[in-house]
Length: 487
RNA sequence: GAGCCAUUAGCUCAGUCGGUAGAGCACCUGACUUUUAAUCAGGGUGUCGCAGGUUCGAUUCCUGCAUGGCUCACCA
Image (cartoon, rainbow, N blue to C red; front, top):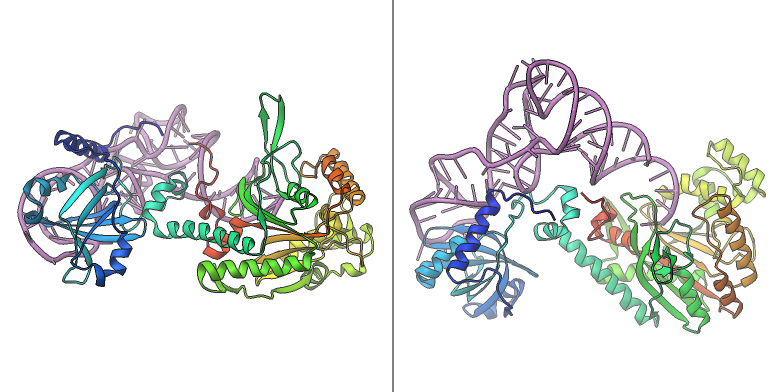
């Protein structure tokens, strides 16, 4: 950050820093291992009352009363009150309290007691300076609201806004719960390349970077799918990866250029198994982190208890759009239906793409309760296995909660000849100018030729899952440092 | 990428139908040995986002730019 002009508040803090140094006190002190966290002292009051404890943390409030001073000390687990007395500390040490500022880190020790009003307090017998804060914190009860500053200076947001802190602690616990759940189900966590020569596994524009020694462009991955499936071929039957994905697309309350997914693949399973796994995974994460199966998101309550509803895409399109794709047999008929509905089409749109367009336009937002929408058209599913009963469709589903897609899964396509054809179709679209069409991945087709067991695969956007489980309306509320333009 | 809105003290916000600005908290000075949004007395600490234009004079009006938010488009 630029060295901006010191305003009055920062000058005052620097002066206090100098005064500390003049008295031989280092304003940026050394390590200190406290005996307790604030919350432990409060919880274990029965045992700790009148006993000496030591604490370390940040001063969040100072109330001086002449020869006595109260302060609030905030640490990792909570906030506790401190009590300083002239007659206990002695004049020299007590007077140094005037050099305290809100935001400073100090360590204290002394016995625990309860004030007249019943507040658990540490009566300070000695303290140490740990760190002088040279910039003032936002004020105590309005906090930091400026959205831009909250994202740019997330550390300040975390100091001041406890809800923000809670959200990110929950995010960590949700991912931990997910990892535990998958490990318990015998999945193996793996890591696959972030930098790739072919960005595959999804329909999206990649970021491009450059390797100096190899003298070549590399793509940042847009999915983990194709590498994970290679591992099934290699005999790692149940694998998953939790990792960062990068897509060079728009930014919105639901989209950040880098975001986190979990993808998992299970040999010998199919998409029905993935539905069961998905609802169990969401349910368990909610139970373990929130302690409940019911989540409230933006005023709506959702019960995540399995089983979730299951509907086909054709059924929901019939229900919400009033168009029956079961009775539309070809591309021309689908285009006609779209024309009647006033949907904008490109000339080359096919039956399945138009079905999907109807679904996205008329249905997605209606899907509030947890629901699996299944049997996606092959035209929009280049990596999913075709249905035996209708080769225009695939064994693919997406899960929706509150109108938001939260999971995408299918029975994996393991026929290398079919896969090559799908890639070639994508390639044709790419050459026609569709920058999001899938790239040809010859090596993946070769891998399939060695034989990939039938398998089910599942992808979950973790950021969106965390949004729902923490009632956060914007993806930026669940990403610590969301992408911003430099100021 | 398009439209709309916002940007004033460290923070949260008022305000000026055009005459260079104000409140609370924070901060500074003083009083106060169980307060907790401590209280009491005194003190305003500012490039009014940036750059132009109109004007005797712009923080205010106009234009452009920057950053952010929302909506739309794209996507997860």
